[in-house]
Length: 206
Image (cartoon, rainbow, N blue to C red; front, side, top):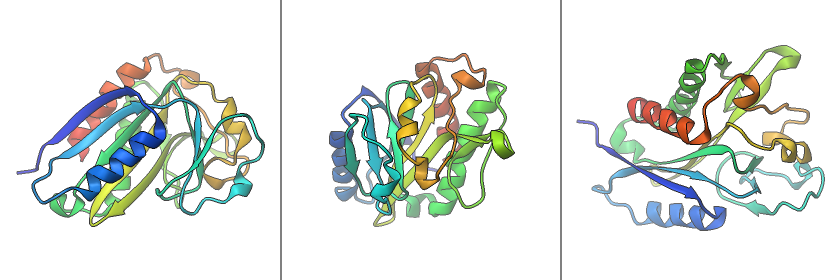
């Protein structure tokens, strides 16, 4: 029987305190610790992953920058974005990080499809994208850390936010990468409702 996943809707929380809480939760796990999903929103912040290079921060716009321990480069978090942190024992669930990434992407793709938004993966660039060619834009970002077979960090889905801070960075390390959100793709759901639908998909897929 697949172990249950506890869902915690934490509201708007400080980024660094939440990150430290994820580290502490993961370090303190044992074979009986239940898996969890944390649904959050953050105040404006740029986070720089382990491979992150400062040159991808293009200009100073008064938003704090925090170097953290997830994979990937630089991204932006802010109000109107749904963030889901997945704290899973992957050994117990029987799949690895590549499969976890695929399932996270699929959850986002299904949430978007229900709103009439066609989305897809991009080879070699984790996340979810809409459009093609010059019209391609990223709508969801992924970044994970695996420690002792357990995951933390997760995904962020742009719903109805101020996208202008993305212009101050090379999103995920890609110069010129366009960024979009559900609201601009015809979606009408509030971030809270998107979080509910995303949770339903994650619980089924994970």
